[in-house]
Image (cartoon, rainbow, N blue to C red):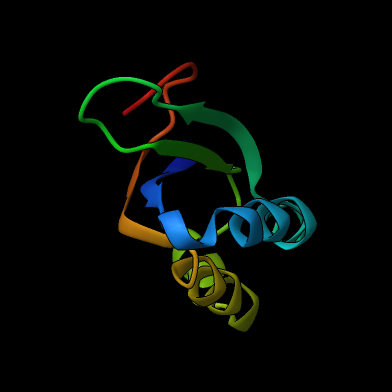
Length: 100
């Protein structure tokens, strides 16, 4: 069964422009190069939930631990941390559709 990596975070107010540039130019292409399928991207506009939720499916046949321990993922993750706060992630069985 495919797994889904669910990530949530808030954008650091002092780094909004750099954040958006990084996500479009580096994070999304990098995640896709790793073979993850980005299928969720949600923004909270009102309320006390995380500002951003991103879901990426790790297809069957790919080992999630191996993907998330690559130097490329570590680099992407570390760069993302420069622009966000309150980051959380979890791996769940992909059920299709929205998952939180």
